[in-house]
Amino acid sequence: MRATLPIALLCSAAVAAAQTPRRPTIGNAVRPYVAIDTPTVALTHVRVIDGTGAPAKADQTILIENGRITSLGDANQARVPAGAQVLDLTGKSVIPGFVMVHEHLFYPTGPGAYAYLDESFTRLYLAGGVTSMRTGGDMNGFGDLGIKRAIDRGEKPGPWIDATAPYLEGPGLNLPQVHELTDANDARRMVDFWSSMGATSLKAYMHITRDELKAAIDEGHKHGMKTTGHLCSVTYREAASLGIDNLEHGFFAATDFVPDKKPDVCPGQNAGQASVAAVDPSSQAVKSLIAELVKRHVAMTSTLTVFETLAPGRPMPPGLDVLVPELRDLFQQRYDAAQRNPRGAMATLLPKARQLEVDFFRAGGMLLAGTDPTGGGGVIPGFSNQRAVELLVESGLTPLEAIKVATSNGATYLGRTNVGSLAVGKQADLVVIDGDPSARIDDIRKVSMVFKEGVGYDPAKLIASVRGKVGLF
Image 1 (cartoon, rainbow, N blue to C red):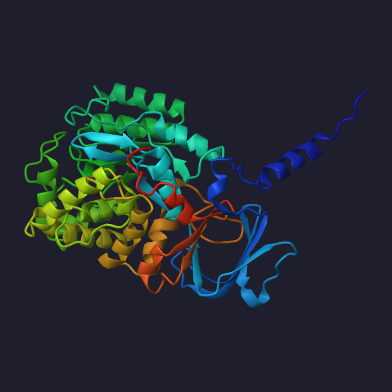
Image 2 (cartoon, rainbow, N blue to C red):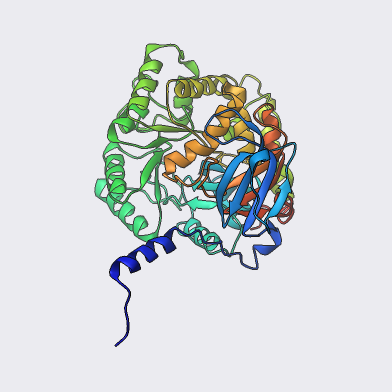
């Protein structure tokens, strides 16, 4: 008769095995971009910006073992195990990996036309310091799910992905690849189907009705899925009352201030944006809306990078050299047109909407960060994520606050308690920066290495692999 272990001993062994960190798989296609792949790594004499908003700490040592942070403290007190790979990072900073929540794997190639660029975009996101991201709406159906699974299996380099289902949208967008909801039951069916396929988030779009939105939100919550929205037909106040979890594009998409707004009817993006540009940020209408969003715990995603490309007087966005020449030229034409129109609507709207985002944050709102590469070109993954943090500081946040928005706030929203900040026990998702972004936010662009699950990636090699080719794959 075969001997058996006591049930209690088997259970404790199973729990221990489940809690033991596992080294991530690195496939042959990922290996060329890996700079460090040893079980134990010590990052010594480094400045730590932990992502919580706390002041930076100088001369720290971070010990990484099997993909987790096992020690973090003063360098002169740190004990580095024999056999550890030691990196002297004097003069450098470490921040948590970015957790960005309005990203895409497709890019505009013409009016109403988009190219799915999963291979190049995921490399660029990782190179820019993005170790976790939510796709903000899917035009490809199974594309986001497929690349997520390939990254999780170690077959491709890229961030961890929270994959959003295809857009929940009603008639009016007129894009053939977007399903048009017919009623609330159709919304429920769509949520159920994509949940069963592996999608983990939902996004409502501009022409959805309140009934459809409510049905999608409630059905999504049954499956543990949060719903965000780029809205128009439904106001922010209405969406908050229906239980929405997140609103996209700050206040750029709000139609709450449109005079004589008709229920369930999108007055058009131009009308909505004109009403935001005209509103007084100190008015009771604005203060009341912000208070309602905060009370109902509705998060808001800032996507200033996409709107900056539409505004006059703004600098050329970074990273354009990775695009194929045709896409660079296409964006250059748009950029030049914006510069020739100094009195365009965005000249007034951009500073007003930025102030409203800061007011929301100061009122206690959960502000998140994203970039949205799908607007009209010029928003390049990785480069734009760094730019998003710079723009938050330019808008009025401190560097430490902006870094928190782009790291721990995103992780908190997504329910990822193991990432987003630097602490013992957390997953070793972190970014090494040449400089001090807590004092000079533009140092955020000086990324020298990105760790994901304790594996160090070379951003220069990731970028070089796609330079001049983005638009092809």
